[in-house]
Image (cartoon, rainbow, N blue to C red; front, side, top):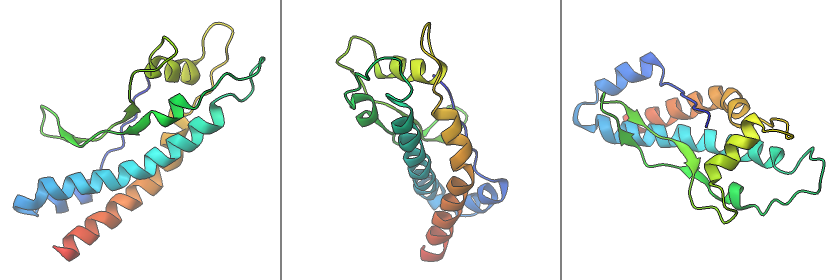
Length: 143
């Protein structure tokens, strides 16, 4: 599965560190705001990729598109806050949603790749950063 990292801008990280005890809660809300922007773009790109340009009639059930979502914000072992976009399981067709997404993203024998994750990451980067900065400013001004 493709991995997409969008890092918080350094200026935003510096300002976050000055929040003291509120840092973790604000960081979570800021990441959620950015994650929602990227999630919407991934959903849009996935929807455009599923069942399009196939040799045979699409058998898409919409299950893959319905399984995509945001994880809760978690702290990794390095102390970094992370939020992920992924697929809930299980899938009824005998393969996992992650496997189906991988086949779409990279293709397989007899099926051309129809990338949706990488283009979504590129297309949503600026809007994600803007949403995170806006949410951060709201938190700082409101708190």
